[in-house]
Each structure stands twice: as C-alpha cells, then as structure tokens.
Length: 293
Image 1 (spheres, rainbow, N blue to C red):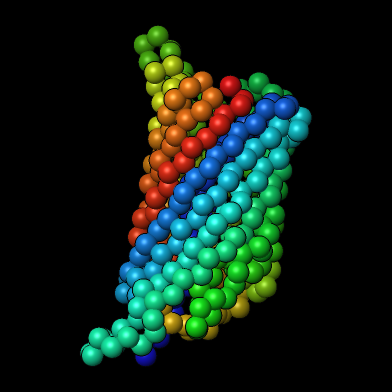
Image 2: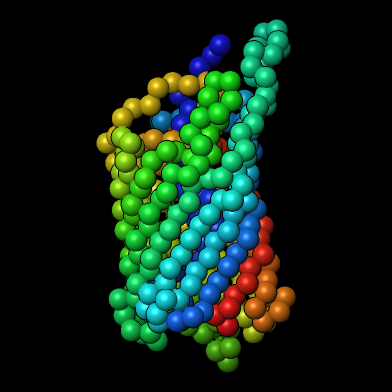
C-alpha cells in the first residue's frame, strides 16, 4: 500500500467562510445568526513542499451555526459550532489490479466548537474602528474513526487565538449612495498537543447594492505555520486535521437580504498556494438572521 504524507487543515477554511468578522462589535442586545452548509471534496493535496500529489477521493461536510450577540456596545460574544460533521473516503484500490484494499468509510459527529469574545478598543461610531478578539477552540470533534482510525471531525487540541481587526466604512458612487467597507486583521494562534503555532492575517472588502439588500464580499486569508510542533507520522491518504499546514486563500461571497433581517448567502473559497492542505475549492451556502438592522 502506498503511503502519503497527507495532513489536511480544513477547519481553517470552514471558519473563514462561516463567520461575519470585522472590527465592528454588535450593539448591546443585537444579534446575528447564520446556519450554513460547507463542503469540500478532493482527490489531490498540496505536499509539505507546495507540490501536488493524488489521494483517494475524500470529502468533509459541515452543517454549522455561527452567532454573534452584543453583551455591551463594545463587547460581543461569538460562537461557531459544527453541529454535524461528516468525513468520508471512497474505496482505496490497488493501482495495478483495481482490487479494493480499504473499503470506503465515513465518520459522522459534531465538529470542533469555537467560542470568542470581541472588544471594541475604539468608541462606537469611530471612523476607523479597532477591536481585539480572543478565540478558544474547543476539541469537541472526534479525532479517530474508521478501520484505520484516520477519519476525523476535529484535531483534538485546545487552541487560543488573539486577533486584532481594523477597518472603515465609506460611500461610493456619484451621489455617495453605495455603501462599502474594508477591513484587515492580524492574529496569533497558540496550539496545544504538540501542534505548531500560527501567524494569521487577512483583508476583506465588501460593497452593498440596491440600498444594501445585496452584498458582494471578497476575502484574502493567510495562515503561516511556525512549524515548531511535532512532526506527524505518515498515514494512508485520507483527511486529518493537520499539523504544520499553511496556505494563502481567497473567498468570494454574496449575501442577499430577502427581507430587512432575513437573507441567504453563498461562498466560494480556494487557495493561491498551500502546504499540507487539500488542493480543491470549498463551497458554502447559508441562511442568516440579522437582528442588528
């Protein structure tokens, strides 16, 4: 059986596509809730040197809830919870005889939950708001499943991330009637269980059309691993949550308000480059309730 060095960090892309983000805390008593379905299916991956290698077709599907609630005008509580996570792999066949070596399997469970607090460092209404966030990654997913115990819905480690966001909103167009915003962030993710720490940064730009009923959003996200954790063992070609993974990815999102508070969204994400991650785009669709409007 051919073995591959395949360590795939899907959770990061899940988070970026599911969350609203930005430096703007919710107002006291206001909330935002989103139910989304995210998935990726891939038959190749980026290696530790950035090249491409094939693997047995593998997929991850997450049904998740993301929520924000304003505790005060400057302090917001946030939660990302994959209520149902499915990791599967197709049959692993011999390259010469096509004989099934390992039958296809699947693991279904809850995923890893993120709990966060965001605090506005600047006063509400500031022209250039700045906020700081603390994220705690709770290892509620399963770390081993299937015959070879290489199916996972979580990485089994408790991480803590500090992130600083800044941004600004402005009007576009001849009559200044088109709303727009730009924001950026930097963060440091401390990981346990001999996982490598990470430096993260990104940019986001959004524009609202038709009196802010239809939003178009572009995101750029980067994860740089410090590669100071333990080196994982080789494993058969299936998905696990990786150590020493890094990437630069982009996301294109559209969100449409059907009513003043209820809407639908769709997201496409892919990577410009990567190391030890899946080499395939991910997709997400969702419905949201924006009680901040």
